[in-house]
Length: 445
Image (cartoon, rainbow, N blue to C red; front, side, top):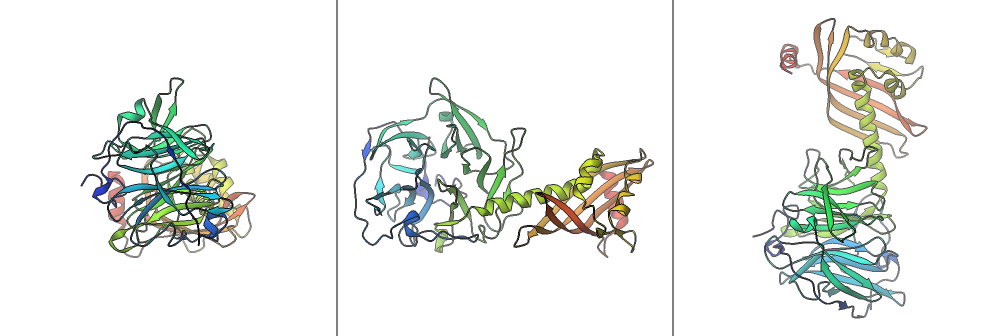
């Protein structure tokens, strides 16, 4: 069994993968679309922020594996991958003719040069399709075929470093870069074509992830992975580009997308309105295609900003970046926080501000901040958020070490002028907390 581990550990034997050679083009055959609803997305009503099955009985059919959805620019052509009852993995194609969708039919982009083909994605300009054909084994490689009118022509394997390792799931950017999964390393990569047509590659440097869908402007990527904060056997995440050319920590897209089952192979419509993905929720963990409003990405972005804000409200002390903390805490008379040391708490920003006399004192040195088990919930308006976490906040005062270890931490934030401000916080220790053990653990740190 060659590739049970490749597709998020949910692909049958038939997904054995091998590289092939180029072949002639394929002409698309018209087929009747009787009974198929008319309109965008096969006449389906776009989903909200909770995922729904996409085009049931037409695209998503019970008992059949379906994954890797790609709509062409303009939204009037569709490619997706299925596994037939006979075990063949193939691409299905549909398009709009005279205002109506054709019934999805098999199409061979390699012209039959390879036994199976999968994960075909239109380029951003619609002039090419990148896909992954194979015969046997794990020698799958990425190919390109040109789109000329009603035909897919001139299929060729990509050359250069991109061809040195098994690879699949190629999605593209407006600039022509390809993002794909390097199977041998189980990591997402980026490739760019040189003047000689050779594709040079580099790892993305994401914390985790495999199947990767990139935004046209490379501002974010959708990935699938199994991670500590997962809901089930595999979830969909988003990571955002940073100013230094890197990526944020991937953010789980939440309960509207992820479930107790495995979710994988994320992609988006050409207009960016919806996300498509596979969920393995049928008997024997067969996958169906789901879709969800892409607003879940902005929700995830806000959750990332909230987590960053909450983290920095403690971690600022590591560098004594006073301006950062001042930008986080609400400058309100009714700001409030409870601390473990006393019952009175801190009332108002003016009282909070007095703490800088201690924090900025040269005798005070923050030594370690660890925020874990972070959770947050946004209000329906998206303007208020509640969070909880476990905190280690360790320091040295006048040569003596101290630490709030395993501290329970909750709070409320409000969004003002596009920035999150902390309105109140509550720190506490569990009643069964062993302070002696905590101190010893800190000394070991």
